[in-house]
Amino acid sequence: MSSLAQTDKLFFDATSLDRGKVERLVSETLAGADDGELYLEYAQSEGMVWDDGKLRTASFDTSQGFGLRAVCGETIGFAHAVNLDEETLRRAASSVAAVKGGYAGTLALPPIGTNRHLYGDDNPLLSKTFEERLVLLQEIDAYVRARDPHVHQVSVSLAAMWQAVQIIGAGGFRVADIRPLVRLNVSVVAKQGDRMESGAHGAGGRLSYDHLFDPTQWQGMADEALRKALVNLEAVEARAGEMTVVVGAGWPAVLLHEAIGHGLEGDFNRKKTSAFAGLLGQQVAAKGVTIMDDGTLENRRGSISIDDEGTPSQCTTLIEDGKLVGYMQDRLNGRLMGGASTGNGRRESFACQPYPRMTNTMMLAGSHVPEEIIASVDRGIYAADFGGGQVDITSGKFVFSATEAYEIEGGKIGRPVKGASLVGSGFEVLKKVSMIGNDVKLDTGVGTCGKNGQSVPVGVAQPTLRIDAMTVGGASV
Image (cartoon, rainbow, N blue to C red; front, side, top):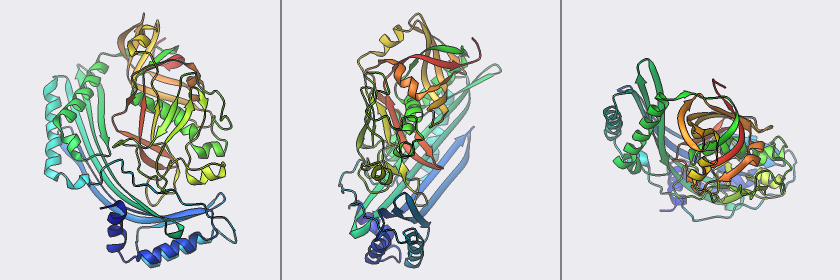
């Protein structure tokens, strides 16, 4: 059954809404506007947390509703509600239409449709019973505790979501998408004497639960979380100062996402609040640096068959061989900047407006093997994994904490270090990339991005990188 047929059952067959009346109301509401849409959503989500030998939380939520939007120039009329009935929709339409106020715009052409499906549409919440999920959490807890006597505490979280959306535009335009999402995280606290350190690892994607319930998958996650905790148990305080930094492949691209990716979103550049504003065609990074945002990767956490305005996702090159060549756009900002949407209009739910957002943001591989990059560094730090961070979009300045890092001495990886933070400017760091590895790796599927109070699932990828000079914050000099 097609996504449209499935969502028709949810939004029309199961409610009092008449599809023909809804389509006419949307067309009337958008008459004279530049753009807009009706966004219908039905979502189910669940989560379980097993912590310190007990089931701490278990939740299940079902939500539905609509968001109706009309765009006139830069002005937006937006209304949302949880009731899917004609009276509520008409009240919302009356409020939204008021934004036109005599405005005579030219309605933009709707997005081009697509039959592409990047993931399955089965609901993961229906694939496993509560008892089966509980048994999995208990098995992971027991497995980790049996692996090493230093294990002090284990926390395991399992979450899934099934989201069905339909987007209706003027003139009968309709598209739909069914989006599954699962995630498993394992966190371990290791203890030796009075010292305790932690390690965490997780995975997920637009998949079924079967993938995460496979012992070869969850055991690998548990082993990795334990390994990180044991490494950190042996870590010494990081040295502070400016030094060469080697950044690992995969999840460490979260630094790329935060420090650079947000600065390449269209709204920040249209408003000239990004450090990259007005620099199209200019060299903003070292030669060899190519960065793109790709929402078309199958089953990836950040992928979307269509964005939340109905535009098919695409692969957008942002920086090519060091030159800034593009921005990520939704329909509003793309139009106002004289271009088009790149399929990056995303929203958290029906209650939110869409903004330009990343999907899977990645740097392409270079020619150096990782061992060659490490061997080139006389004194520095190897940041293998990252935790949280902060970035100022206007200046591009960031601070990130490394959750797994090592000293580099004489071209060799040395002692693990703790408390290391990387401080710098995304704009400047790009120019200091001197070696790019051939080992580009996607993250394991755990990323969530926040912007304007909204959260959406995202992915990142990069190879091992050598950055010639960065400020490293630590406890010793």
